[in-house]
Length: 210
Image (cartoon, rainbow, N blue to C red; front, top):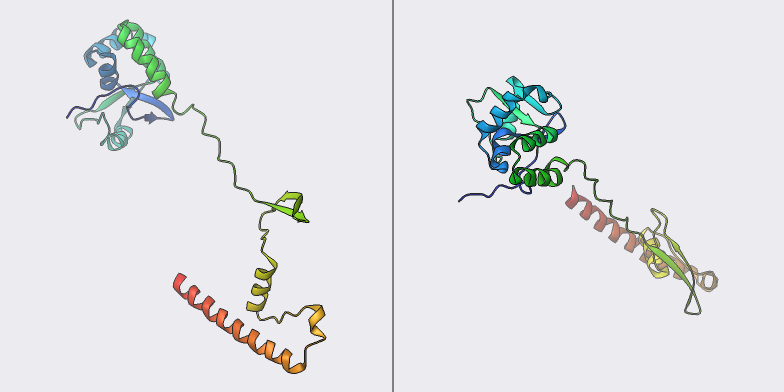
């Protein structure tokens, strides 16, 4: 099965923080033979500046690049001892020397979809989720505000339940004077049992998570 190669689908190759493309891949996209691009370069070498229009990679740099491109659309053959990589400006020079409609059309697509991938601004961060609390009087909203980080909102009943689980006896000011000592002791006993029960539950959950 033959994979169609286009400027929109080729994977990005970067050398010295610069998007680059090999002679073979550039020739394939331009509809020319690699030898023609090499001959054009040889005849016009004074119009190309290394580091600006191309990079000549060899030695250890080439070995690392060969590994990184091993599974790419354009792997480097094992017998290659030096590799020319073309920058955006180098690819433009080759399109100009070929002077074909295909070369110019492909170069424009390379500009949009390949060479400028790193220049595209990152997507804006997603808005952070936020929560609000609304105050009511007589079943009508009277005020609203954002919750501050770390702030927790719970119902009065939930708050009382958490306090009891922590081992506290909760009695309203209206009821405290009506309770006998035995009733208070009974409430304390029940609260202690509930506290011990939830302490065991907490320890079991902690063991599972360890």
